Image (cartoon, rainbow, N blue to C red):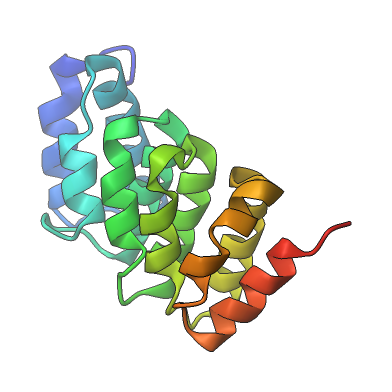
Length: 165
């Protein structure tokens, strides 16, 4: 299907929108759409599903966030940062994992701000692990002033990040 590309893209999108697919079928379909769109240089529909601007259930939104990380499209980073504030923890978890794949670049402050109020333990722990990989010890120490403004739970995590081995 992916090799057929644009010729099946519109039908695939209609099928995803139909809400008649099983969860497995929907997962395979959105990944096929994500792969097709990645070869065309844009993820407009995947981004719309991730942001819940287009019909899609929780599974599709999580898969859309994962696709943005898998394709490592830098245009998806602001979308993933926005998803860190989503009310659904599974979407936030997929977003932080995807940010770990794409890299933070110059977005570290925005990402730290977004995860500051994280309440889900798994998402918070994942964010901590991603921060350890994305920020050097020196960068974490330089951001100590920034982290002092964060909520107490995240402050604890940031203090753990500043530990030396």
